[in-house]
Length: 247
Image 1 (tube, rainbow, N blue to C red):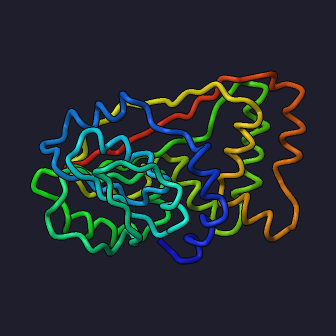
Image 2: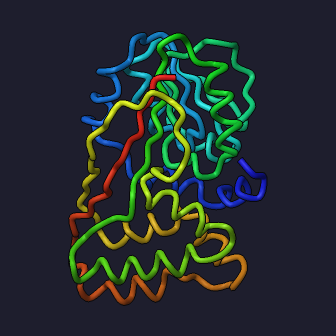
């Protein structure tokens, strides 16, 4: 991960841990259906450790890496998870040591070719690589255009737009030089208050960067706009996608 992008994630680590969506059980079930071994897994760019925690219930040991110590400081703990600071493209792991490698909502920040080389180095025979992501949250026809306009405002500059487009393409525009296993679509659904939505906005590195550059909070306007129509809670859905390949 580029060091500049690493800095983007320092300010909002606690919001990231609390408000970023988790991934649905049926997605993990699908991945595990194709895994040959359950000894060790590597969760790359683990962030707040949500995928690592899920994997810790299925694997003997989980190694979870990230370039941000502040993210790891907010990560969930389990006895068989070891967290460490390391870039995706260069880790201290031994050759051929993992049965499953995961990267969730992060590969767009990597030097992808170098990351794939690292994946090949550390993967066991018949290991899997799972590249996971989620797209823009959906609420309803009235609210979606308001939130999507906010997305466009926040992700236009600062190197965010290109990365955002990779996510919106569900990573179909990146190279994936592995034997791919066709994957279904998934969804993470919640009942959110407006405070939950605001916390999710604060977890964006682009929002934190905007606050620093403009010395104002860009979420105030959109939260005020939504206040009259949101009600107590709203169902929000995150479309979840997966590219799963045999390394």
